[in-house]
Length: 137
Length: 227
Image (cartoon, rainbow over all chains, first blue to last red; front, side, top):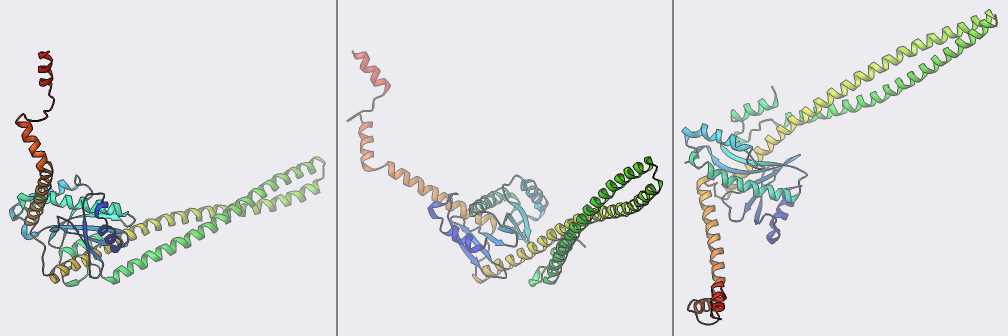
């Protein structure tokens, strides 16, 4: 599995999508291949897909450290921990100064599994931002 | 220091700045070398084990043959004694003594092979556990490295395209607006479809009681009453 296979699959889905969404995928250059996946209508929160030796990582950036109401940070983190297990397929993490939701899949996942993961991750990120609204500036 | 701790310390210490890797390529190579070495040790140990087990089986087989032979010769000795042939009995007894000595040697070899086999099995299990652990740690190192590189690529891409990640609330707001617009369009389209001019006129006429009226329970009842 590589990001180009994923990109080709998602880009040509159009009306054959199983999730009801359309995708726009652009590879990003760098030390390792990263695929920027935009779900049409949700371009503001793209999902980044990278592939390592044994897993496929899908990451959506939620908010930066500077967007959190400082006095509510501990409460926000507790709420995120509590939400972590109920949230389907995704988990919270922090990358540098950004809070993210991510999903890790086996390198042997099918393209349909990846599509479902991406859509679920996107749904989760919108819901999380909406639910965590009171902790953010 | 465990790899987990190393990663946490490095991330906290800001080692991720300016392309500085959390665990440098050299330590990854050392790790991979250790995994290869472990795998090699396991393969050698498994081959040794097969050899030791084969030797043990051979020793056990020889031992049982010797024991059978001892029993057989004991029978011969008894028969010679019964015949009063002391000289033959002594000759057979000497043979038995020799067989017993061989059997003792085989017994010892058998036990020693069994012990070696147990030790090798234990060693293989231990090495396999170690190998799993090395692999788990290498995954952590590689994933950290991969996320770091991906993040750097994403950040560079945003800088290059002169755009930046939006504030979370703004992003959500925009997406919701787009969704609302889409829903409105869908609703409008549905409405438009149900409001074709012909349909509207028909409805208006019906409302005015002109033309074909829809049969209602009341109208049926009224008709029946009139009969």
